[in-house]
Amino acid sequence: MDKKAYAEKKHEEVKAMMEELAVRLTSSEDVAGYLNKRLFVLDEFDIPCSKWSAMNQFLVMLSGTFDARGFDQWKQTGRQVKKGAHAARILVPCFGKKEDESGETVDVLRFFKTVPVFRAEDTEGDPLPYEAELAELSARVPALPLVDVAKKIGVSVSFGFSSGAYYGYYSPSARKIMLCTDAEQTFFHELAHAVDDKLGSLHTETRGMDEVVAEFTACFLASLYGKAANLLYTRRYLAAHGKIGDVFKALDRAAKVAAYIIGEAEAAQAA
Image (cartoon, rainbow, N blue to C red; front, side, top):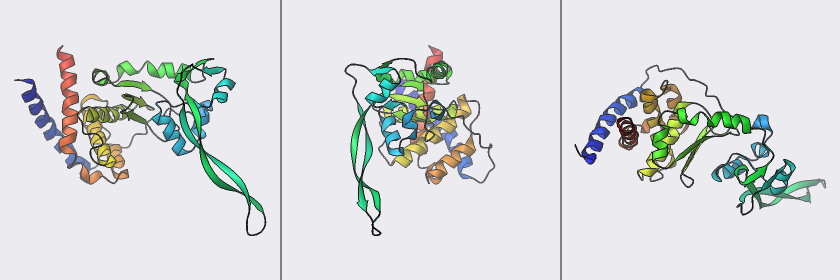
């Protein structure tokens, strides 16, 4: 059987299995209880950006890090920005004074200005308070199920810390998966985004559909490779995006993503 025929056969086999899963996800059937995922957070390390606005935390995330600070902030930690490092930009509100109707002076927002910040990865100097724990987390990467599939498509995988707003993400521009939890299903979710991207389907529909494909695929992969598939978590995740009824619409695309991942895993085992 040639490679194309094998891929088509695998897609149809996976699609049939995922259709059964879609029926369970959209039925009233009782499913496995909700498991709280451990989240690695920045708060205990007193990282400045963990207290920034949600928008600025998102901008930090887009720069490919979980710790970004201004030039002087890094100096206060005993670190310096490496020569040639490029700054990211956050938005800082600027206030002025104004008298209100009662004659009292109050602060009013005048405008926002951009302020340069630098990633921890672009600094050097004294150790950071979270480096030991980060090293321990990084040692877990090779043990992740299917992590070799990510590496084969040129996507790096690492652990980091969250402000509490997210459990992980995939960056198409950086070709990188960042995990802020040790839940395998979260890794499968981000891996699904990465493979969806490789297959040329990511962002071709609404972001909501991207999330349906990723979580649907993650739940399926967890049943095959993980410790357990958390169907109730998947239901709640899809419901939060208002998309639980779209699993059948996402079936063909999700099956292609899952079939690609399974095919790469089987090829690696056979090699």
